[in-house]
Image 1 (cartoon, one colour):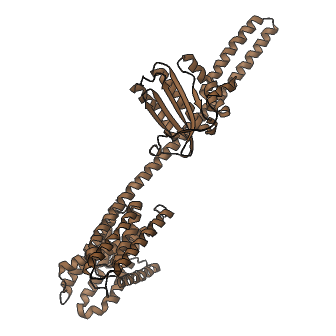
Image 2 (spheres, one colour; image 1 turned 90 degrees about the horizontal axis):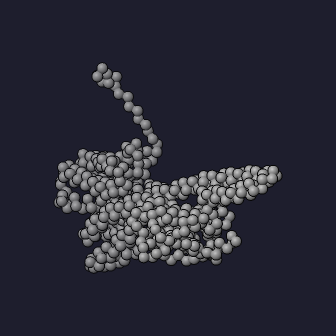
Image 3 (cartoon, one colour; image 1 turned 180 degrees about the vertical axis):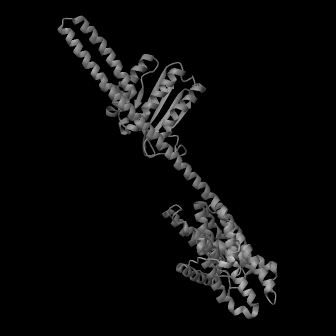
Length: 536
């Protein structure tokens, strides 16, 4: 059974993709064109090779290998007599598989991080490809290379590494153009300004005479400043634009009449730029990483605040339904008592009818006050301040003989019902908290106002004795019970000395990190503490 395959043969399903041959041709042409712009110390085909492997799915890798072999064959076939057929075949067919293996070994790292792996892939590819090239030339050339192996390794590794950092980031940036944040106008303008400045410095370096090597190097190093600025402003995307442009301008402005030429002065600068480019990519990746973490946290906080608002709104609507039901129930009870009183009068029991009418009026008023504390329906018609002074809350405060007359300024009707209702709950809860856990008189103040174009309300619930401070337990309870509702409406809460200070704001959802102190709160509206006069 184990030898059946030897007798029956193997069945191989070969799927030929016409698009793959187009890809192979396009890759070969891209490598050839990049080679015309390259030097040994600035080798763009190495970047094209890595970029192609990163962009194409593994099912198209055989076509990339075919395109690589076609590119090398048209270039190296005339070298067969000089270097030997073995070297031409092996050196042409071994580089692409080596890069594919490097990328394959980095797949776990690529899944774990978004961009940090690119430096590792670039460095490993440059080392592996250079090592193969040097080893094959030393072993297979009839006459060993004139350049010392150490010198060749240094030159080719730097050239390949710079070529990869020039092409691969741009390819990844294009591949992720939909996954990354939108290209805003500010990003386009800043990128265009940075690239223009780099081009200006690059052309300036070209105009410097060859004998002024130090001045030329200084100008070339200045080109890194716009790339650094782009990286700091836009993270990995900034580095993916700035570093390739930096390498490309330096490489294209390097004196080189033919591809294998070498410029020692530019090579020293390129070594510095290779290290700086790698550092910028690492910096940009970290900036992008923390930016994404901040965005995720910000979105989660805003979603939590929206859920808190929705929960509060649903709870208030439920209480509103209960209050309306209680009101209808109270109306029914009052109607029934009225019928009983009328019947008693008709039967001549005037004293009992009068007593019952008086008692029912007292209990009806108390019933309605308690119903208004379940949900202040008056708030929807006449606003927060009137609801505080006309409802059961004010009656309950008066019965304690500890809450002085509230000082209310501004026009609460300029605020939404949601914010007014949240303020009502926060204010009544804070007064109840102080009544239960603190002694002495309590003062309530509220002021509607504006801060940075947003409407809001500032509420202070304090002990009348300014020399007394709230206990630590009271402050803890205040933060636990009130902070959730306050933060859900873009506000802040502070417990300082003898008072609880709260601010609630209108407008879009804001996270706690975006909330400010609102110390510049400016009053608005004309309605104030005299609103109680409307009740008389």
